[in-house]
Image (cartoon, rainbow, N blue to C red; front, side, top):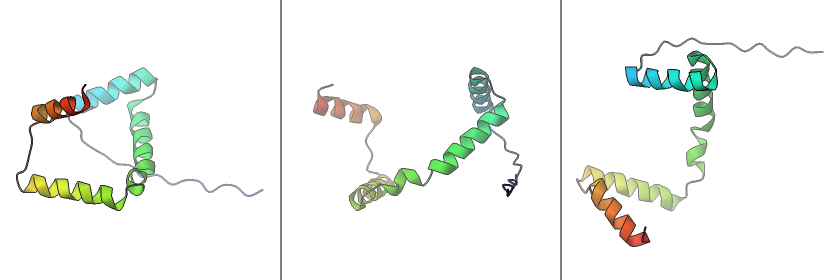
Length: 93
């Protein structure tokens, strides 16, 4: 029987804002795990899903996002309250 290779590990030291640390600690406590284990789990999920989120985007989707970014750079902005009012009117919410 062949043994599976033992994984190697790296250690990272990071600084987070107090409010982020408090939220991480609260979630870890709710899940009953150490905060370090929660952070490792979140890092695994992020690494596994980061590139999958955008794989299904069509050329039109990407073009629309790029157009929006260009509009923002050119100062074409709409305040959130105005946009929410437009969406509510359009979709009768």
